[in-house]
Length: 233
Ligand code: URA
Image 1 (cartoon, rainbow, N blue to C red):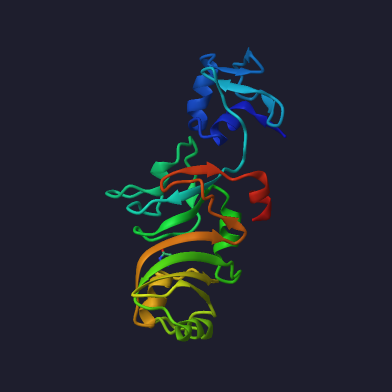
Image 2 (image 1 turned 135 degrees about the horizontal axis):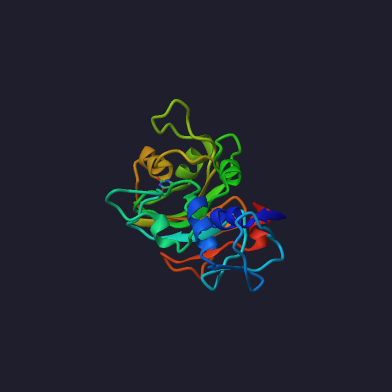
């Protein structure tokens, strides 16, 4: 794709259109090693190598990051007080946002992207994309709970929850479970357990649609999605 040099740099988060024009006119931008001072110069985004102040700037319309969200940060783009998930991502792009929310104390898989259409497909309540959570629960989770989750629970909203698949890993005074839900209501997992008289002590998202949390990522770490992961979404 051929694209104007100033648009290329602005799209990649190197500054506003007028800021990058200034950089270009100052001679700080090269294309394939040659200084280019015309902002309207057309570059081939697939094959030309563009550098700003000696740093390569590669062109990708969209960025996709898998973050293992740690507890204690909020799933927002900006917050006047709290640290946000975007503070953890080292990218020049100003248009990144978290695709969906996890509570401040929830850990695990969060997709950070600037691809609004993809985020919409994943999050739309009509699409029923599976989300898989691991949780530690105060109290004994039972086969009766499995049946109640499967039947749909009244959690105080207009409609009961859609059938959810509850799997018990360990049932004891504290239990461990996996839960697959097809919705993303506010505090949904916590409210579902609350509806059966139990409390979530720890919550971590493991999967969203086809995207699985990379187990090599410690809380707070992230990586770019592979091409296969993006295509599968
Ligand atoms: N359900 C919750 O209760 N909290 C989350 O963060 C995600 C799902």
